[in-house]
Image 1 (cartoon, rainbow over the protein chains, first blue to last red):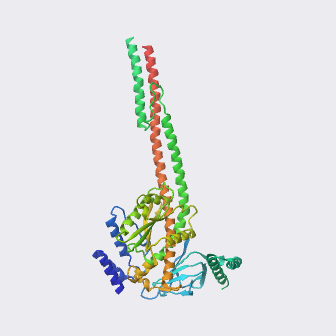
Image 2: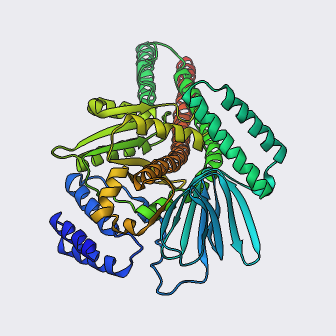
Image 3: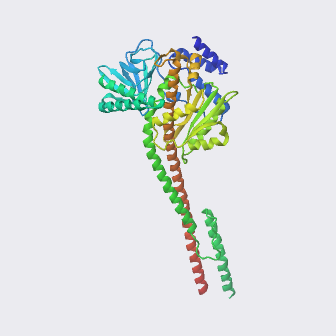
Length: 209
Length: 322
């Protein structure tokens, strides 16, 4: 409450009109999850129009995104998962029961109603549970955001379904990187070899586990 | 005798008049340079013909360029649409605080390397300059990072001292995430920033491109804003992984910048191909219209020369008879 009122005061101090202040109070009371940036954009647009009146102000990503629903009062039954890669949206707004993500602190299970979390991911297995079927992906690394309204966003750099991985290549890769670590001279080479070993051992564990 | 002399005079007068008439007709066909030599009997259609040949060649070239741009657009459009999911999680978490108040602001302008793509590069540069005006003030500094040759050329003219880095030849190899991640790393290492604003043209459809600005904040700014500014509810998120919140925030903002830059460069590349398609299409249409006008002039010139010949023959014949 104090935070929200201080943000209102800041808006008024910025010389925003009474209308924008009213709008901010309305938005911050309605949805705790949706960021109150609609008003910040209106202050940006006003500032733009004052300085550069001839050119239309550029759009921001907020205008291209469907807004997220607010935090519901009771815990929903399903978790909505968005799993995106740079070249593909693997799962978008899929309703599932549970996901297990490989956070750097270990495997983390996420159920509907999970507390809001930002998790950094390490190379490992992501499994998506829906009813009785489980889909497992090996992801390279990335981030997972779990929002209070039971929406989970997982952003990974690279992901493959587990059954596409060839175990003989994994063994060979692991041996290669072990050798590189032994012959590495500079810090950079050592770090690269160590990363290779980490990823390949995680792959190994994924195939066996 | 006098009549014959008069008629001879008439003939001699007719010739200069005829040549003046053709000069007039030629001038209306935009070929004022070449004057018909005085006393020549046939009017030269060579000039108009040369011009028609070159306009036809230009039409062929622009049609081919349009086809090439269309095929390149098809290839890159699917990539861009697949990458659209990439920036949404970050915007859902952190919002887009375009009006954020920071000391050091860096504007990353994405443009194309090649020209003939309509007005999209000028639009990007105009928006960047507008952003520069909006975000600059007392003890605030604004710098540019330029991707692409066309924006560099335009911005060097009046903001040379504000340009930190300029990168060209981005699209020599097809765009992929690794390349953009390395580029993002380069930029983040060499530039001090509190907020990065990426300016690009978002691909809406083949004929419409929307100038867009995406704001990425530095970890310190995120901390500052989460404590009482625009990202007020960021504190309610638990942090998993990493030793400190600052470390995770730094990884988060760097990853966000790489993802957003990847999507932005793909969208800009799509917009470039789409704009080139429509520019080349209107250019071929113009060339076609020009060709029509030149054909009419050519026919008029040709018919005028035939008519002149006929007049000469007939008047010569009638002079002999009567």
